[in-house]
Length: 328
Image (cartoon, rainbow, N blue to C red):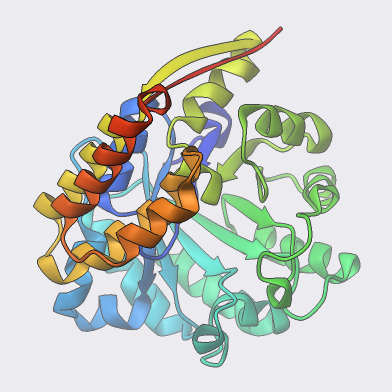
């Protein structure tokens, strides 16, 4: 089970990113962050699709660990919950946030937010079979943000027995445009009795502290900011608990560890896509990120991607180690 107030920080589930190698990296920096799988199709889980196996793989130290489940059929979702919790996990999260066109046209992800009755049926069926924590990650609406409807929807989730809600405060049609409206996180926190996890536009430890201070939310979920900075959970925890943080990070070693684990832990057909997705965000740590990523995008083999960053740092050795310090 997930103790939101104890764990405090959550790694957002991200397709092609929250792989076992990346989760292993995050865990090295912080032992308590709640880790999430990539988004899993309930139909594929129920059908025993072999291509799904790498996405369901767990590291030995992943716990506390949550499987994130995508689907719109209540019975299929419930059956997938049973299969996943039998594999061992602390929780299962229902995706009501993905806004990709191929997802919403199947009545999945953020599209479910448009039908409160259908959403209620999905949660009811999943809650009936889940012995572990059951949560929902949602946006503030499908095509628009209506605060009254958002609150009605969240109270429905609470009434159906979800243990906590994570809110990304943008509606589905916005994708990642405009700023996340943290005021909506506060709205849920002020009106629900279950924990509320805030999400959206948290890039630094200072952002994390400000979000908690401004909204009163019980915990934070960080996605894109954590791919660029897998150490963000460690810094944020230190800042919130002690008022200060200090950390030295070897960027080449961190990148190399994730990439080599990708090569060793995942099937070869996933190497290029997963390596490129991680690199896209991680290269933002360097001055000439655009040029670096342009070179990496043309590479198929992981060892050549590592070599490319190594050669860059040979020319720019002052960028290899990054020192983070802040607080009072």
